[in-house]
Length: 115
Image (cartoon, rainbow, N blue to C red; front, top):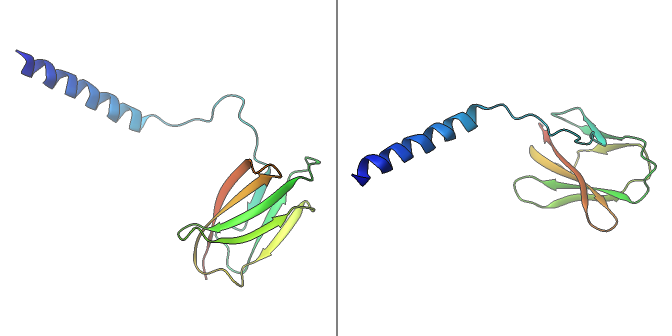
């Protein structure tokens, strides 16, 4: 008698799982707009970070190798546009963080280097 119950519960959970995977994800209402525009992506010889004019001077840009986790760049942002040469970067995925002075990550993203 319990076996049909467990089978029906399992099928019900499976159907919910399938529906959850098919439901498109939409951004939450009230989400903030990105502070950084990044281009070109994928990049070959340089990547440009354009920071929206927020008037904040307490931010730094950190770039990590996406596979190894090695910190490649950690620089205080004092301009609205930073061009980062990719001479020391190998082919792969990289992650950037926009970080406040307190250490809080304000924004994150990724870019690809194709050499």
